[in-house]
Amino acid sequence: MTLLDYSYWITQFLLALGVLCAVYRVYKGPSVLDRVISVDVILIIVGSVMLVEMAYSGSTDYILFVVVTAVIGFLGAVAIARYVAVRQPDSEDLIRRTEEQARALTDEPASEPETPKSPWGSGALPHGGTLLEDESTSWFAALARSGFVPKRKQDDDATEPPPGSSPDGPDDGTDNKPGPGGAQ
Amino acid sequence: MTLDTVLDGTAAVFMLVGGLMSLAAGIGLVRFPDLHSRMHAATKPQVLGLLMLVLSAAIMWRSWSWVAIALLAWGLMILTAPVSAHVVGRAGYRTKHMRADLLADDELASAVDRLSRQRGVRREVKDD
Image 1 (cartoon, rainbow over the protein chains, first blue to last red):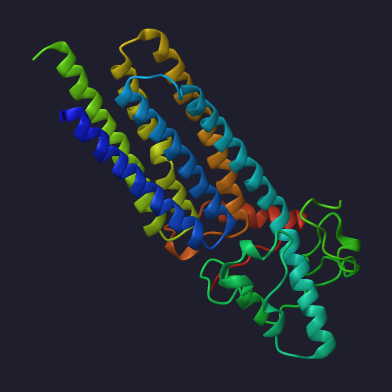
Image 2 (cartoon, one colour):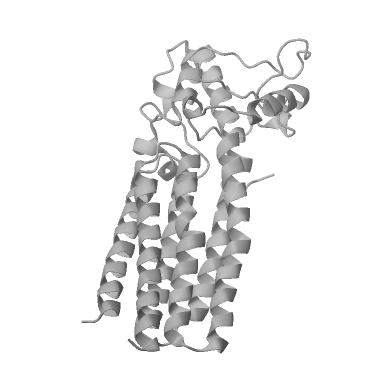
């Protein structure tokens, strides 16, 4: 075996280790954004495997796949990140408001509505939807337990502005949760 | 030691560096505590690792015509990686996918507080 053979096998082993670590982060990742960047890394490593294979065998078969891989990873990351950036404050406000309404109706502690149905399904939430143990979303559980009452829109803004005053404010308190496609 | 041996050795070293960059990204994705530090780790195979592997492939091909296409792939990655990193980082900051206790200084927090106080878009939650 020459030096290139050793380098080829060691590099493929290192790339496989990188893919395994990224897959672990996709499985374990507490938020959808961690999964997005991990999937991005997986896509780039797949392109890297193609490049290494081409460099070893001397063929140029997969170079267009490498180009397409670069573009596809960019599009997926941007689309999902935009979706999270638009959606998550709305869903949090909806969840917070429905929790407050449920607590005002039933006068129960907020143990039961800690498992909200997010618009993107329960797969994006860690531990099967319970937001209790996760460190990156524990501020939300703490806020839900703290008894923070959001103010309505007809209250004037002399105090702190209400958290749920999104531009589509008047109907999202009574309406159902919109689907992932966005019913607005 | 002919020229072919030198070129093969250079390509092998570049290939190993590219593989090490991917391994560093994987370890960083597993070990780092929050989203933005994981993003810092995830950009390693995007730029430097892919450049190393593209150079390795270009050296092994020994053909100038394919080098342009290989560098096109790398250039596309250079152009698109900041866009996706910016968008993902902004989304992560806005939805608090970070650990503010690990930050030395959060210079964006004052601007976000001022804007959210003016427009009332969303109350930024401080983790106390």
